[in-house]
Length: 307
Image (cartoon, rainbow, N blue to C red):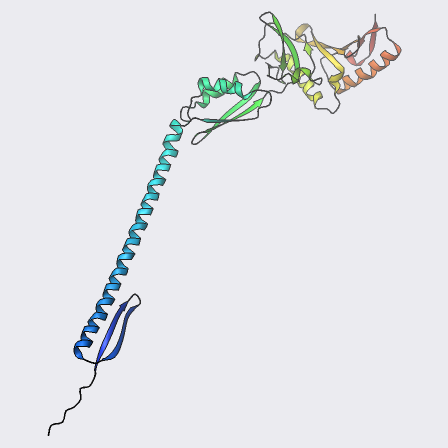
């Protein structure tokens, strides 16, 4: 008598390939064929999924490489434009500092003749030479800032006195700085400033704007500049300072007060003490001696001359 032994259910190992690694599990299959086919399906599906994920990762890496390459090309083009194109082709940008009385348009007219239109063509030495020829400018410096900017620093002359010179038969007012240089400006404020005295008698008959008068008169300009720094406006009471030349290159001064017919004689040293004495003596003379024509303050003494 034969006994039929029932077939035991077949166990199979299921393998899943995922991004985390291999996951293995066993399960019972009803038939060998069914289990084999299903196991093959599971294995093949995992392989297909892993292969698709790898392709997506490769695509992302390729896109990133392309983006980086494009950025590098753009940076390279920007560097080429910044380094070569702008200095050679872009118009130069000129900025001024220190301007007060000299107009920027006057400076630009001089620069346009010698400077050059672009940064690479801009000749700093020629520009300094051209701007130094303007009488109202004391010093000038030029700094070129890459790639298209030029900074021009100007120090103007400071007017301490004014005088009158003859140009082509016409009398024109000019200013004098502390070093004795004659110059002009585009503003009329200097001419109207009562704290800037009119100085006559200087040897300026054959002088032109931009020239410097003899060195022996420069101490007078320095003395005037020192008095202008005082809080009292002494020169507002003086309409004119006349320089009277003497032998051996010396000179004396004649002061003409405002609203008075009296002349004040002084030596070549003009300081606050002389002006204080002038104010006091004038006050006494105007109130007690109206017939006085001249007051002499030279040599440390005070004397009068009547009409």
